[in-house]
Every structure is written in C-alpha cells, then in structure tokens.
Length: 238
Image 1 (cartoon, rainbow, N blue to C red):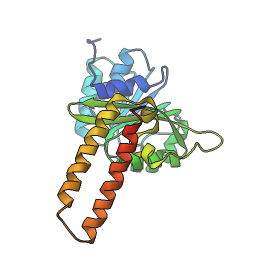
Image 2: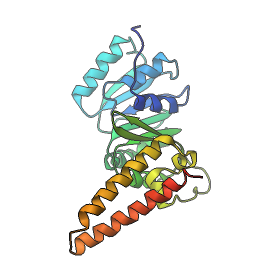
Image 3: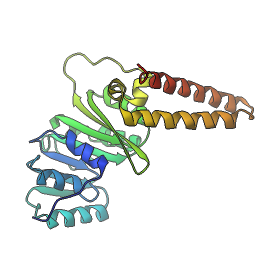
Image 4: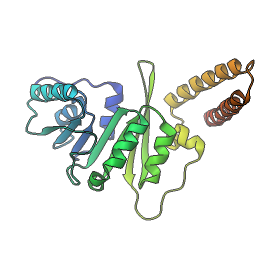
C-alpha cells in the first residue's frame, strides 16, 4: 500500500464519528479520501463511494487504485442514494453540500435509509432548517462538532434513528447553533457566534438610514437574530 492519507480537519472530524466496524456509504465522495483513510486505519471493513459527477468519481477511482483498495471500496456513479439498496451500509456520510440538497437526497433516498445505524452529516447552508428536518424525520442528533478551517465554519452532526418516544423538540436557538455544541460551550461555536454578531450589527447599521416596510421587517429579523446570538453567548459566561 501507498503511504498515509492526510485528511483536512473537516474530514478528520467526520472520520472520527464513524463507528468502528461499520460499512460506509459516502455520498458525494469527491476524491474518495474518506473511505481510503478509514480503510488504512482499519476502522471499516469496506465502503461504497458515490458521486453524481464522472470527474470526481474518476479521481476517487484513481485514488482507490493508488492504495490497492479496489476490492474493498466500490464506486458508483449515481444521484444521491438512487443506486444504494437498504442494508448495503451501516454508516451514511453526506458532507460538503448545501442543506436543501442534502434534504432532497435524504427524502428521495428513503428506500435506502432503514439499513443505516447512523448518519454523519455536514451541511454547508440552511443549518437550522436542516437540523429540524433531521429531527422531524425519525432521527435524533447524538453528537455535534464544529471545525474552523481556512476561515470557514463547518458544523458536523451524527444522527441515529430514535426508538420509542420522539425526543424533546429543540428551541430555535438550539436549532440555529446546535444544542450539543451549546451544552459543551464549544470554543469554535463561540468564534462563530461572535462573527455572526458582528455581521448582524453591521447589517443593523446599514438599515438604520433606510425606510419602507421591507426594511422594517428585515430590521426586526436582524434584531431577533442578534438576541438569539446574545442569548447563546451568555452560556459561555457561566
């Protein structure tokens, strides 16, 4: 085998969430770094790596071949979970996409979801809506991480199917920023909150001199968001 695979901090955090011994399905695998890394770590017995683009999948195939992993990592050209059958994997990873696209992949791929023990998800946008979507569709979020890399913030979550009663509903503040991140007083979340507060303050200042119903509505929205951020930041004081 070739040498070690160096993962980004974001992919390393995702890799750490994968339960040892689980078969992996990596949707939108890009270069296939994650399954190759996990195989080299002897953390997984095998994987299916999918991508909707021929270019990324070809690069993944080359990378897999470089490490002589063809017998353990299968590649499939497909849209989301369309070519995945229920029971083919234990851990599903979907990362590095917008929240709405990930919601669509999960909704259109419902046929494949019953076999998975855990979902590891890293949405790039519409985070609060995505958290709500996950919890309204039969899952509970049991682990959260946040990575700051190259000036970008990456929230990562691990969700498992809930059994019995539906878990308690998260507040708007918890949906926006992550209940488990808030409970841990996560240091990267604090940096994110401070940045978001600065952005909202700048928007407020820009709206100050403008008028009209639309501006008034936006001003109220920004003020509400600022209050949620301030409430979240207060948790770090205690």
